Amino acid sequence: MHCQLVVLGGGPGGYAAAFLAADEGLEVTIVEAESRLGGTCLLRGCIPSKALLHVAKVIGEVDELRHEWGVTYNDRPTIDVEKVRARKDQVITNLTGGLASLAKRRGVKVIRAKGSFTSSTSLLLEPVGGQSNGESNIPEGGTLTFDHCIVATGSVPAMPPAFDIGTDRVMDSTGALAMKDIPNTLLVIGGGYIGLELGSVYAQLGSKVTVVELSEGLLPGADRDLVKPLAKRLEKLLDGRIYLNTKVGSVAEVGDQVEVTFEGPGKFGHERFDRVLVSVGRRPVTRGLGLENTQVKVSDRGFIVIDHQQRTSDPHILAIGDVAGDPMLAHKASHEGRIAAEVLAGKPSVFDKAAIPAVVFTDPEIAWAGLTQDEAKRTGRVVDVEVYPWAASGRAQALGITDGLTKWLVDPETHRVLGCGIVGSGAGELIAEAVLAIEMGCEVHDITETVHPHPTLSETLMNAGEVHYGTATEIYKPKKRAPVEA
Image (cartoon, rainbow, N blue to C red; front, side):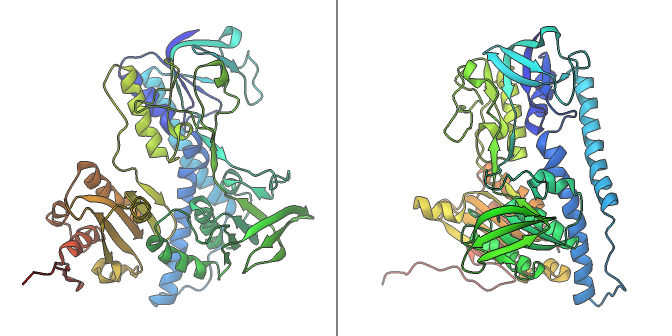
């Protein structure tokens, strides 16, 4: 069997590339080991986690009404785990069904199989999930040849060998999202975005959650000004059970619990938990793909080396998404998929984005795009940092979410906006305006001269720009003026 273009992997990057390539007139086949399209993001990542985070957020808002707004309820909510799980699974089913329909309407063939390269222009297809060749749609002989292939195999949760003790009581993010139960006690190893998102969900659903992080702060690499409000909220939600600079020494199953040893200034010794979530990062899926049978080069970290057109060192193979390097984000994969498809269609497309937004969907949310303050310090770049506190926002006051802030990083010479950071409710939605501004090369006055609706949180982007000029109405922060020589 031969095809013009094979897309290896049916996640957000893979199906975006396949669908656009089909729209451009190419003959396309997706090879996907899962029974449904969607990849990690849809099946056990972005989408199910956001569905559960919605439940957690509403529970938190109800608690806030109870304690701060005088709206009382007689009892705490009762959690029907099976119904929560079923609703989350229904969301996945609806979206995967839509993808299958779109593939069919575009004439994109989907083969369920594990694919590995036997050469630069051929894949060996093997049955998965208990299939036999007779039960699958794998071509006779199990070989698929192609003119070009886009590798979009994504990434998987990293599980250090010391924590992989052969029990489902020690979970990765996939296990946590399966939500077999709501444990009385849960340890989250790793204070990154996945650990904090899922830890927040279980805490709101009733688990006693503890978070340990090896570094000196939560969300390593994120702007400290943005992390502070979240850390404060999590301290309250978790009743102070956040331990930084803390190492996990050993993990062992003892009866129906997991015993964990700790080494840190605030937590030392051992403690038992009903379940443990290991959230220490992800690794690209490049092992076992047969890349050694091609000319593709792989970095020391396991990423496929690509150029600005998603091309690898093998002229027949391109790569997109998590396997093509950081940041491992679904929206970055989708855009890379579009670039790869356009390149194969003969268009002069390149992946050259000024800003790729990142969002942590905790409560409050954290979002940033473009240059960060830490990057500016590290590279010695001089920037103006303009911060607008949400305590000055009428909308934030009305909603009781005054601990947020909006920050612009501005070039002091050209007044162009270089980066933006937001912490607060809906930050993930608000950051889109900043991404557009950075991508277009806007100057601050382009933001401040754009009429924003009132009262909204979107005004904080305009107001943070006005801080740059010393004209913010709701706060008093005059712009420093250069001294005038006598």
